[in-house]
Length: 215
Ligand SMILES: [Zn+2]
Image (cartoon, rainbow, N blue to C red; front, side):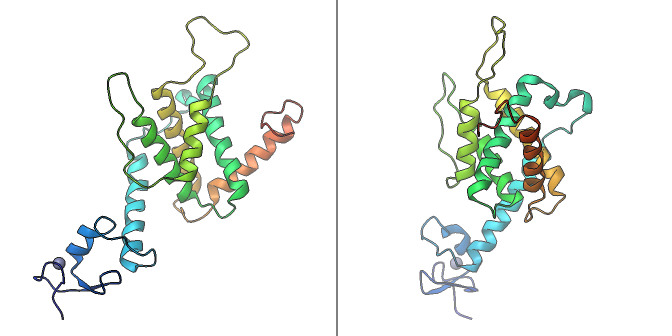
């Protein structure tokens, strides 16, 4: 077997289309999408990507504490409203993307959470996002940024806008819902179907109050 074209030391086990030569797995990993622009159909690239996504999914809920019924944030009117807003942006997105999978929802929620994490605080400079732009993630992020909690009577000192901690809590709560409903089948649409069902029920129950913003 030929030697790796880059290090000239290890065996060139992977054919790189861009270089037109063989790379060893180590060099492939080092230059992948950094030094070279990998073609989307490269098997080593897609393998790497799905591995990265899987890791993100596993990581995403490992640090979320399970819900005890009495302490579920959905019982809180204010936080429940923000979770509803997150779900609403997912529902609206599925209307133009009907092949959306539960995995993509999870990744989008993670993306929004990472973005909330990096929100500018008074004394810190916001860092850039580590991964590529996620369209649904941006949609969810904008939705929670613009969400306002409106009560008939505003208690003094109570803010209509949500703070960073509340946003993260609500994204975590939605992540848990997806994980729970997807039942391990993240390539499927268990969660999305469940959500659509729930929303069409809300729509029916409140046809006059216009809760979904549709006529
Ligand atoms: Zn090498």
